[in-house]
Image (cartoon, rainbow, N blue to C red):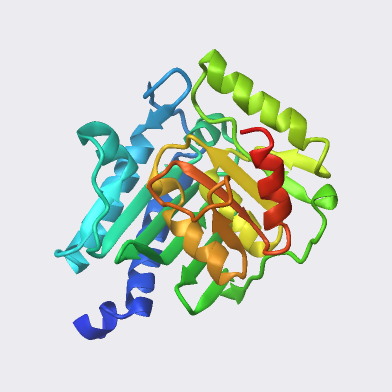
Length: 275
């Protein structure tokens, strides 16, 4: 997209165009590395990071910092290295350079770049790009959500029993966490049609936004970079995003649930039952 000056870049659609450019450039790195041998490091027992994660984050931050030098930046890999960055009211780019790193390492094609922009702590711009199957999800606060530039809408499913639910097991492997996770899943399997674990929180949220999934929850994920982009896209597609307890969604809480509007109450009731 041609640069028509600073005024256009500072509009919401200018921010979106900048984020899409950054996501596509990072996506090229991911696509090129997808079928190659990966140099893998462990952040935890099963939590992985690759050179591709780091290269993508550096590329995205450099691209956006040149355009918006006064904005704040929060990224998964820099935060992992230097500690948590507090979210303020300032325009803040929140980036997961490669969501689904374990999928990437194993050659499972559910990986994405996730870029979100918060203004006044409100998720305002969302871009989630899967470069392996070339799907670009975008959302702008108040302007709708799109998949490859075509409008998307959350499902109209009204019965949890016939809903497709997604969740993630997370990266913690202590007995307390595993027991709580599996007990919740055991209970939910009696209340939904089926369950999926796709390995990417950002793509799970996009699944809600385009109607592939009807309900989703995850507790204990990495941080705001997992949900900042997807939150905008879900809301703009007519979905709802909230805390699994039914309360308001907090981008910093490491707790998220999302669904179409018709299933929220049923999903919350099912989740609270096992809290």
